[in-house]
Image (cartoon, rainbow, N blue to C red; front, side, top):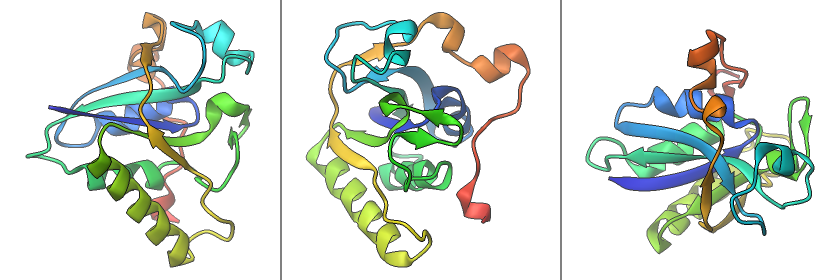
Length: 161
């Protein structure tokens, strides 16, 4: 198994769409990219810890490539809005790829550049790409939120646009 970490706005929707990808063994809501150890949701929501809401994906590279996961990431949020996804505003909702190896970084940068060059979006892709920092698992009530509450996902699929 390998890990991949993505921030694409509210982590409930991000977790939900990655769980549907064949080859993904698990997707866990959490926080990454900030300066406080083991932050709480309440602390992250103050926009003062520097963390992004992220999902850590465990996947089998024999069943799904990292490149495919990056494609899924870009298809399921707007990577052109700085620190915002829909009505959610703040650095915790930033578009970010936290890479776990030089190969992941290479793939992420190539995918971002290709998407930017494609003209799919009218604005430039602002997704940050950086090495994965510590991942802090979110509180249990955030895990599988849509499943537990029988709710539909809140993310927009940009592949259909």
